[in-house]
Length: 89
Image 1 (cartoon, helix red, strand yellow):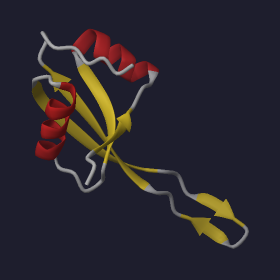
Image 2 (image 1 turned 45 degrees about the vertical axis):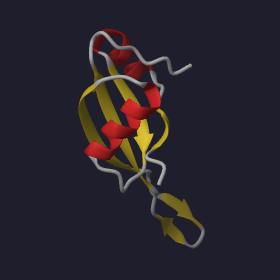
Image 3 (image 1 turned 90 degrees about the vertical axis):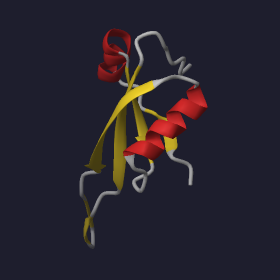
């Protein structure tokens, strides 16, 4: 199972990474916080202080045969040690 799908780069997450050393990722919905922490530490070679997660659902869409429910996704906010930086690009 690939835990990290991709970095989530938005204006809000870019500000958080510059000011507070927090980085946002879209992760597998089955992954827990310890798996996310290990994956980020192994992939980016940084020290992770904490992980916050939230489940997100895409909005429902109306089609000609009714409503289609959105797909679930999981967002992880990873806080790294102040001495470490992640180069996402």
